[in-house]
Image (cartoon, rainbow, N blue to C red; front, side, top):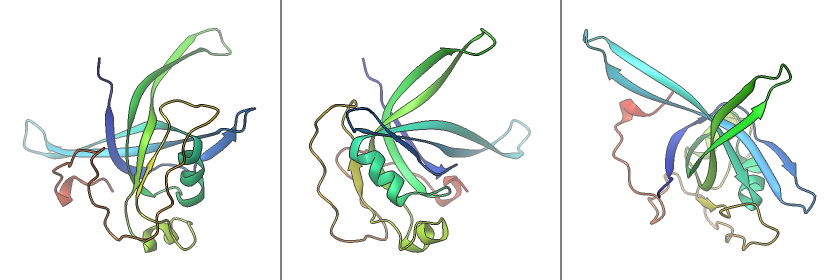
Length: 166
């Protein structure tokens, strides 16, 4: 079976990071994506979705260091169903995306305005497929790019300027 999700949008809140007993980082946030369309009456409408994201390992630490609320990102990963019992005894569930690859979009100025200091280096950050005790770390990017190029891991998406959220 195939479980792959690709999302481009803006983070809705700063990364919340925590660590397992073994020292692996886990980061949580959410992304807002939107799509514009014409209704049956010809009226221009916009649909906005908010999706929770989970990062693991070095990707979580990089996301926490460089990304802030409003940062533009492209992520791909796996869709996961979280289920729990609420305090009132009702069963609850929600879908989240476990991020496998992170690509920071936008410029240094965008990152600085979002509270990211001098800004984040643009590039891909690959997460391990599951939280593990040991994993290889991606090489640190050496140059800041203004517009990231497509990578072999992420298929190129044909999006017009009107379809980009926010």
